[in-house]
Length: 185
Image 1 (cartoon, rainbow, N blue to C red):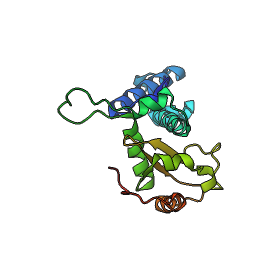
Image 2 (image 1 turned 135 degrees about the vertical axis):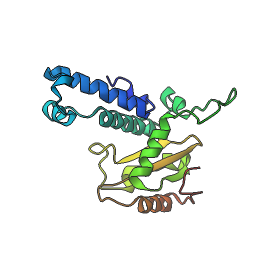
Image 3 (image 1 turned 180 degrees about the vertical axis):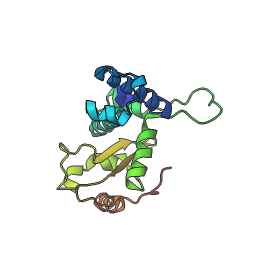
Image 4 (image 1 turned 90 degrees about the vertical axis):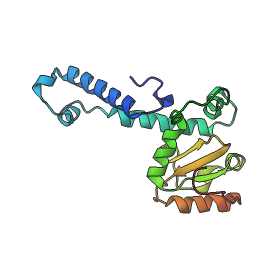
């Protein structure tokens, strides 16, 4: 059910359809029908299955970290950075992109994102910057994903629950860069 979910663009409709399908499967596992009028929370408690939206978002963050840590130019990185520039733009809102979900979640979790040059980020070892940080045990706490303007969005929180602005200042002091803005461009 979650095959390839790391690369999906999440919309409210997609999440709703996945949750409905998951609840139907859980009801089938327990042999319960909708006519029995058992609440979804009770079914979830009985089956002890992780919510599909949480699982998919975890997979997406893991994939974002994996792609961001790659040093070579593989197809996954090229496709992530590619922006089509041919043809006319459609009327209305642009379609949701894979990185839009990451930006939205990172803004909600940690306040202001940090925008820096990619070359500086590649030369820095994030583990050395935060010595008490364990990458293997907490892969979702510090995520860096590639932004479409050849900059890197670095966001996250350490085990000490450092504020993002403190993390940004530590990073900028270490790289000797001046940020253009602490907001998205």
